[in-house]
Image (cartoon, rainbow, N blue to C red; front, side):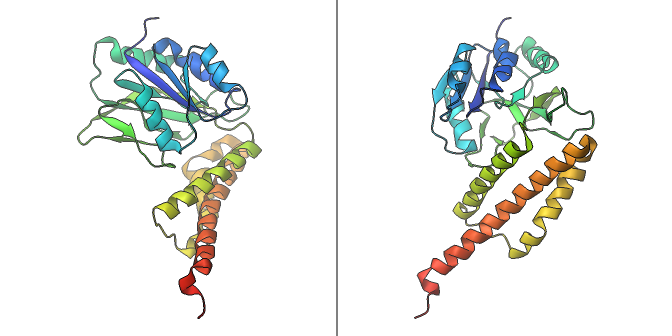
Length: 265
């Protein structure tokens, strides 16, 4: 099929079990498919290259900086970002083609729904919670935030945003243990980010973060419709959010003890 005037970029690290489906779903949309790898040891770069991607190594600087690095490598003005555990289904790919069929799209940025697919499922639950971030955009009107933990596109003032039909399928959970390990590492990065920005979260949050975020995931994000597995993933999410605040508290507590201004004379 004729490629669109569009670059697709993916950031990856040890995604050989998932990135193949990601690339196959989008490679007909573009003649510029970029994979930025941060040091995989499972064959991810070789697999991506064999499927037609242009693979570049860049040591991990955080989510926003890595995606900005990938943006700079893209040849086209229009960018589509998908993660290495996401798949663009056929109806969404057709919708992206239709958007460009008449020439330049009406908006400089488009939101796309993203729905998680848990192990044992082959499609998103019809009532599954869906995020709607900007994933298709002109890089002269938007760039990924430089934040190492906040994964979002910051648009220029006045940029209008459209919405595409269809949803990206997000295969984010390999297993509960793998999910918790990933969330634990992410909570380290969040604690680092809070310290770098000089943010102080009040101590009382330690006592409400876990139950509050369990309710947010289980009820607010409708994990309850996924049965027992939904309960378990909501618990993992709540634990990770608690760890973010706990690690933040621990670092502040230790730093205050090490501060020579607090030492006894």
